[in-house]
Length: 528
Image (cartoon, rainbow, N blue to C red):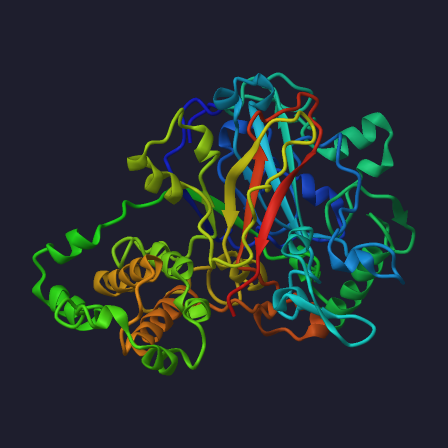
């Protein structure tokens, strides 16, 4: 990491990976808010030495770039659960991830010298049992009605905060020469000096507090987290009487890890795979190809309707081309396996490609494919936004554009204790890596489906087998966390689920006051 802001444009696509913390980094008392501002853990902005900031963090508690002017909390869901007649408010959101991504050079806005983006999700609406993922719900008459795709995206909220190089919280030089007693980067400092008790962070979610519990001696954002902390403390005390309750024992706090970023490996073309000189791969490719040249004839290109009905189970070709025959899904799995065995990148949790459409003055036909590859990598062709999304920035009126997306792989690291499983990349849980020929099968099927040609007989069987192999290769890791085998009574995490979360931000990166400004997100439901 160099001691600079955004002096260089990032590579075309960057991938984010979860890196386990050193053992002991999470062993802090979740009810001691002073531990949130300690400097032992350099994740996020817990250190004033901003030259050390890089990537971001997954899970745990948010590390606020501006520790004084915190967002009004707690942040709550604006999705279906917010329409509950009894509670009249949405479920408190849980912190998912944050990313440090300065934008002063790309926007010519010096106020974006330091810039962090925070993502929060609803544990109720973004769950594996959510009716939203079935795209239907029942009204009082037990009749099904369609849920708008836009509603799911209201279950995720994104905040952006930025600061100029000269600010109230961090030294001008961020290379470690700051006074050892520097505390201006902590909320505790500003709470004490401004006599604002609300800057004592909530002991559960790390957001602005509303009061102190006299029984526990801790600060909380509301009664829901006050009760949660008390219940968790009692449960932990019964089973671990001589141990301090770790922060991640709380159900509302996901397991924490560092988010490290590296460039996506180059994509190897199918032609290169076939001409690599490996005869075995070529033979395998020919034997597994869904559309071998010696099998596809003019008559095959015009299948009889009766044969097509048999192939698709009396469904229309359009219906048959969804789900496992979705070319978007094929492209997703193929892209996840882009690195092969030598550079396996399937564990990527995040894909970063800031404002690809704004980085080019004009896009000719030869650049359209590259532009597409730099944008959102959707998991399905369904539940995608229309041209009206994202809305323009409500703060300055500038266009919003895609910046990064959170992948379903992140769920594994949020819900599973890395200490219980060894580490976040447990090598004992081996997964099949797609060969180049298997990956080529997926890409070939995608091209054929998109061409609109009638599918030859046997397509379904071969295609299903190839896609199943791809799915197992990518999602062989457990996505349904159970807190290392703990029961629900011992603080088990709720089962998050999503297909992808695409984040769109203001292309002007507006704002010069250090406020936390809301951005836009689009959520695709999971495939299964």
